[in-house]
Structures are given as C-alpha cells and as structure tokens.
Picture 1 (cartoon, rainbow, N blue to C red):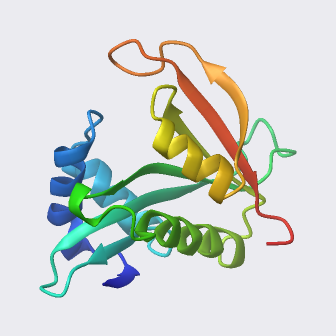
Picture 2 (picture 1 turned 180 degrees about the horizontal axis):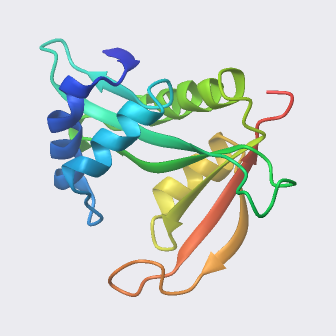
Length: 158
C-alpha cells in the first residue's frame, strides 16, 4: 500500500471509489475544486498496481466576513476505502494525514464531518479510534432523508 497526497490525475480513480461505495456522489468539478484549492488536505491510498483503493477529500473553511471570531477549521467531505481493502487501517491513516495537514499547514483549530446515523462502522472509526465527538444531529441531512451526525475533533495540541 502507498498513501500519498491526491493529485488531479487521481480524480477519476477517487470518483470511481466513491461511486462504488457511497450513495453521495459529486460532479467532477467538485473534486477538481477541492484538489486545486486545498492541495495538501486530500490523500489517496493505492495498491501495488497504482490503482486508487481509498481516499479522503477534505477542505478548509475560513472565517466569513460576517464572523471574524470564527476559527479556521477543516472539513472532511468524503472518505472511502474499497471493501476488499477495509480493516487494514487505511481510513485511519488517510484521516490522520489529512488532519495533520489541516493543523500544520492551514492552522485549523478543529475538523468537522458528517456521517450517516446508520453508519456504525464509520461512527466507531471517528469516535472510538480518532476521538471525534458528536456536535449535533442534522435532521434529514441526506438526500434520502436520513439524519447525519455532525462530528467534530479539536486539532489543538495535536
């Protein structure tokens, strides 16, 4: 396994991984925008043949003009690992690399993400392995009406 920064050339493989695993899909311009705007936040895992088998797509949210007291923070838009490559610690490694980049490069104070309320495996990874906490429940967040857990992890002192 090789884990490295995502590059524009990886976007088709990342999108294919997303389409295979997740019901929430994005247009290519979304992937491109994130990779070009925050190039140090997104990572890919590739097998020995160079095929993308997992990824994390992340961004940085800066304070708005209206709220200068808001902190710079990261947000994980999407993370996915192909089924046959799960339970190898890839998702944890992808998340930790992204979190480190958010903190050290962008000085993000925390990272947030949304996860389906029914996705017990992902919730266990985020909460039990990585230390995220549930900030709130967002009702009918997903297109099919399922609620999302909005989770948050402080990056201070990390």
